[in-house]
Length: 321
Image 1: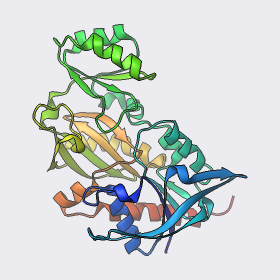
Image 2 (image 1 turned 90 degrees about the vertical axis):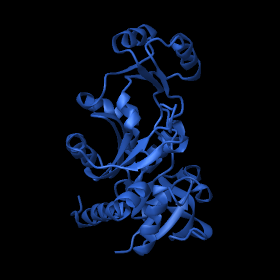
Image 3 (image 1 turned 135 degrees about the vertical axis):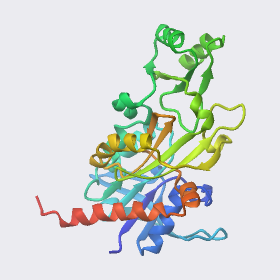
């Protein structure tokens, strides 16, 4: 069954075809014969109850020299499509939230992956707090006294912005670090939102594991080892990708959160696990499938499309209300 699919994402010209997960999803969709469109979030317009976008037909292929071919710009009504892949990168700001409100006008008749309402309701560092029993000790607060008391109790801590991404603004403060007061003053100037404070997990030196879940099922993992002298395990700030196996504890975490993810229409999710603790649930534009594919000799993009197509087919089989 050929589908009409729009990719709501960042500019194609900026994609790293050797690392980008969305690129693999587009390559697989092209191979399956789906008709693909590309548009930017700012290309959407809501008019008279219809959401339209200035979009271009495109095809993607596994070719470093010419990974994409693009057609002429046209206006498409998103309600006429089968699927919208919401794959623009954070920051999770008001523009991102607005995009979810616009897509809510077409979902679920047009399947949006991930469900825009649930994306809006599941910021990475907040959604995870609904599984507090799986997390390290954590504060979300603007109260400086709470932060001071938390560090007195736990010693080493991590402080990060609530809606940050990519490791930006993440600080590791040891028990004797004298910069806490100055850092709290800086956060108060830069951010209106509360900060996230967590007990530092020294296990991060052995890696921060990214686990991919597809429709609530654990599909694979990659370990991200911080560079020497760096507390952050994000690949784009120098962390090293290594193969990783799913441990019994990893599977326990996935089994605890998986049903909720599937029920909420969060088809493609990446979680972060350090040691025995869940630290984030990434639902906006998760990455990691290229690294897992290379290490494990798998094709996770196929499994993701299998899950998406199954949801589209199930929707078509539903009797009219």
